[in-house]
Amino acid sequence: MSFTSRLVSRLMKLPPAETHDFVITRDLRVPMPDGVTLLADYYAPRSGSKRPTILVRSPYGRRGFFASIYALPFVTHGYQVLIQSCRGTAGSGGDFVYVRNEQSDGLATIEWIKQQEWFSGELAMVGGSYMGFVQWAIASEVGPEMKALVPAITTSDTNHFRYQSGSITLETMLNWSTMMTRTAASGPRWNDALGQSRREQQLEKAYVHLPLGEADRVAIQQPSSHFQEVISHSPDDDYWKPVDFSASVGAVTIPIALQAGWYDIFLAWQLQDYQRLRAVGQQPYLLIGPWFHGELPSFAASIRDSLVWLNAQVKGDTSGLREQPVRVFVMGANKWRDLADWPPPVQYEHWYLQAGGGLAPTLSSPSEPDHYRYDPSDPTPAVGGNSLGAAKHMGAKDNRALEARADVLVYTSTALEQDREVIGPIIADLYVRSSLEHTDFFTRLCVVEASGKSINLCDGILRLTPGSISPEADGSLHLSIEVWPTAYHFRKGQHIRVQISSGSHPRFIRNPGTGEPLASGTKLRVAEQTVYHDPEHPSAILLPILKA
Image (cartoon, rainbow, N blue to C red; front, top):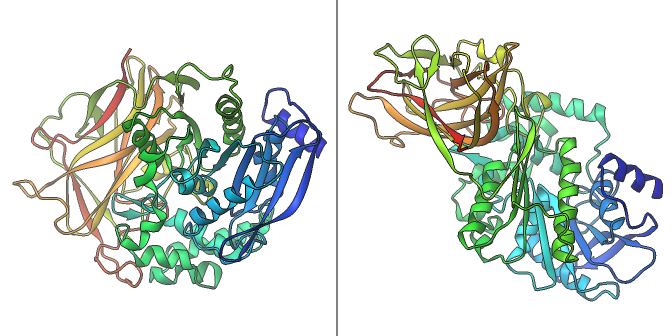
């Protein structure tokens, strides 16, 4: 393991290690109050005094990749590490049930740690995604031995993140749910490239299958309980209360470092956690990089940032802390910028849709609206963005082929005469009309480079249902669409572009236009869509320009 730990340190560009001489104790048995036993691997420097303990609770196994990124960097820098497999995963007893056992199991595990002779009295937790969920599950209940938390690319609200402005993140949900149904007990096979390719082929069939309630069986030839839960319960059902820990965030006093990505599936939700902490006077550390969920380069930056934070909070070594608590990667400029808070002070600019596909900071002159036809049997495809699934659906991508479709409207500025740095949440303020009461509107912000490439930066969707938006006097609908935040430095000569469509499939579930129940509906209706841009209907995108 010494060779592996040295290689990991080099690849992650970590500071000099304290030691590469450590011992690993496999398959420790951690009893839960209900008689179930969870398995854990324990890493500790071979010599020296008792070290602070880092707890990682994972549903993805305890060996291989996750050991490399969550055990080796910390044990070589003066920590003990306990990686535990969550209930029903990778050999641990019981059944894996999404999130519902993580608070009780997490607190029981901490009580067990406190009884071990190697425990120094100092505890911290790290981990991303589900390994971040489990931190929020215990954050308001754990005792004073917990000195710091690092919940990365995650959220305290393990319910609503699957829903965005009325739509459902189909790809993320079906992809993850079916993976866990098939592999939770044994642990996912991350190196099975052929199996992953076959799985993606089956998922592509499942995404377009009707009724949607059978999609899990199409993907993996068996039902997935978590998938069935999501399509059977609305996000505001009491059923989900046990998996939503957002209400307790304000009660958490443990020092917290949040880590996110501009293209991550949890970005907006994680920034809500930041705001919840700020609202009660806490000042979390915040890092936002240019990554999608699980993108490999993100791990090194995450671990480096985690080490600095943990050293400060657990060991009292503040030498590595940055002066400002917020650090964001500004795309376009390709540099990190430190901020005093999030969001930073900005001045919003209105960029109005124009006739002929233009976009300008001045109101449009009187003009006829634009039209497109959304056919859910040929749904507007996802190209890049904040998803979890096929590589073509994640992150920054060239959108030109998408923009050539008849069901995508495109509005582009003239070449910019000066640089503009956009940092913060974005709003799409649109005036529209639809032939259907059940429909979606999707808006995306792009940068058009000198080469002509149109690169997606951020986007948002809004699902309309009967009565959800009161019509204007002329029958049009005035929509305010939350476009997720970004940080981008537009350079002189580049163009700002806005897309408007009615979907991004399979990232978001397609709107069938009928109002039928999602699980059982089979009918599809075409929507005739209208987008206005005139003085009475000043459709625009609002861009947060960083104040000098």
